[in-house]
Length: 281
Image (cartoon, helix red, strand yellow):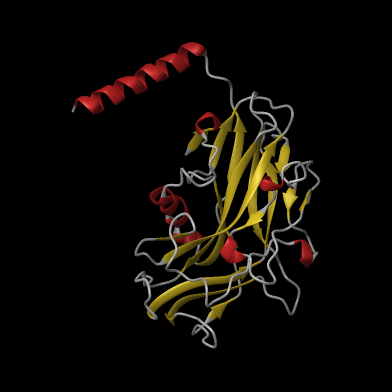
């Protein structure tokens, strides 16, 4: 699914569609058995078309942790027994790759000129020990990434508390339940912004990829639970916790030609005609 930046609302979460998110994040269970780190745009898409006029713009990208169990999760607010999936913390990097047409220059915004666009953890994943990660170029392609190859203090590490965050009680886009039988739960972990460069050319493309971080012993790359018969809380632990994760969806930016004026007008007329017919029914 491609989206045009001209339709991208400035509000970070106002256009989020829970159904679209569920389809994007939860439609391929083979990719997310256990925990996966997924990137999506705020409307649920994973690709965005830009034009050469979209220079030095900040585009938000949402980072989700998706836990996929076996059984449907309990969604009754206040329930303490049933079937629960949840996430405590995760380590990961976000690293760029470029397409065959060359790199769409820019990179993840550090917030140096606008603190509101720095990598920001979702509130419930900002517990003691959490960190949003360091912005730096990790692969030498000139595009700013997020994280580190080896320094633990520079890795994004959203962290929650078992007793305050689990699979129910939240609403989209913060917590999204889905999957073939409601057996997956996606938690909003962090928001990052990709800032486009000062010059864009048709054919350029850049992809942001989530990458699990290989932690040194005695650390583990994540801690989450799935198919727990009880809700973890103070003094109560889930039946089983897990410590490995995988990379899920990436997001791609591609520079395309500016539409010809006649094409844009035709598209507008077609859209108006469709809208008129819908209203007349």
